[in-house]
Amino acid sequence: MDCATGLTLLSNRNECYNQIWHLPTFNPGIDGKTFIELAAKELGVDPNYSVLKKWMVKMVGLFDKTISESVEMIYQSEFEYYFDSTKFDDFFKYQPKPYKDGIHETIEFFKNKVTP
Picture 1 (cartoon, rainbow, N blue to C red):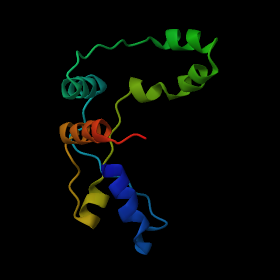
Picture 2: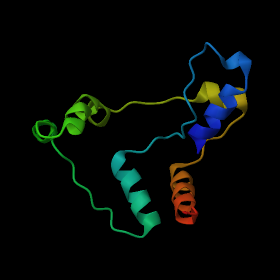
Picture 3: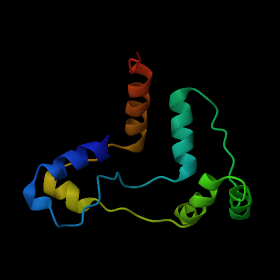
Picture 4: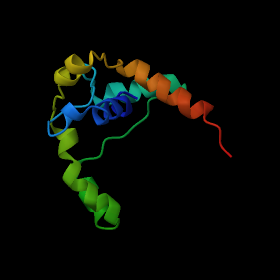
């Protein structure tokens, strides 16, 4: 939700063009395990997951092109990185949602989504 709001805010202000912006990011960040646990709790399920070794992903990639293309993105799970949306938050007087609230709102949206 914060990203959609952020993109809308940025696209409606001419003075935001030709600059580098990080979309709203709540700090402190959380790791993948915590994200899975929060989402599982919200869904009312056990937080079951598996972590594949890099060599395992490469092996599966031999048989599945989509997986083979994802190997180059593994670094996002191997190393910590930090997004700082201070510039955005200060400019728009914006307060990003805590992860728990964002996960709750996203799940509620999909639970209440009307399908044809």
